[in-house]
Length: 240
Image 1: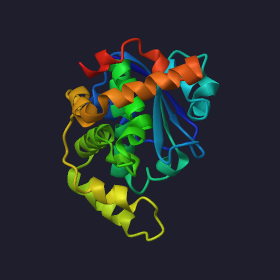
Image 2 (image 1 turned 30 degrees about the vertical axis):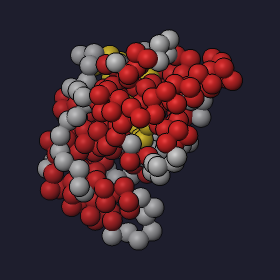
Image 3 (image 1 turned 135 degrees about the vertical axis):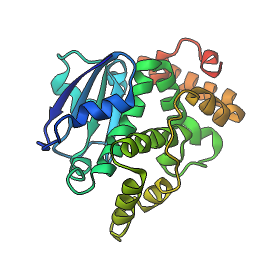
Image 4 (image 1 turned 45 degrees about the vertical axis):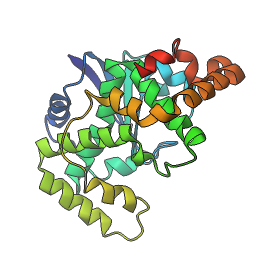
């Protein structure tokens, strides 16, 4: 059972039972979750972020949104920016997708924190060893899986058609800077793909395994306990 705390700093007038319905569809592993509906922008992420409490020391900028609640009982934190929250009224399916995407991250954080760290390390170092072949975050396979997780939840609460229509409506704004991501969203199927996430990530980085491990080791040598890679005792085990 997932216990949750919600901090509605954005003062959204959420429909009765909305969060419960979203969490029911997400079916997260057991654990304690905090959800912050923020009243301002997030430091590094436009719409949302998710971080396990254990890795807060490695992300001081991103963790600021959770620092006011550090004395409360939670294992994993989710935050949505004010921009994301502003979509709730007119684009509820899209808002639900955004929340669902972060819940996909939370699912992995609560289920297997080493897998979460594995994904983070790949995201941070992949372009260093693969020649900058990833130009935007949503191109990483784990982010696609979380996008699909969010689509799945939004579809269950509304419909796939409504979500796609809302995305098309958002795409009409020529001033948006996320057109490529929204266009990509239109092509993703509605399905949960988290059970095979580890194998997906292993397959993705298999050609660069040794180079990645070298980069992680170098980062720990240079930055010590400030390096996220220091949380992993056996890098080889990440690829098994």
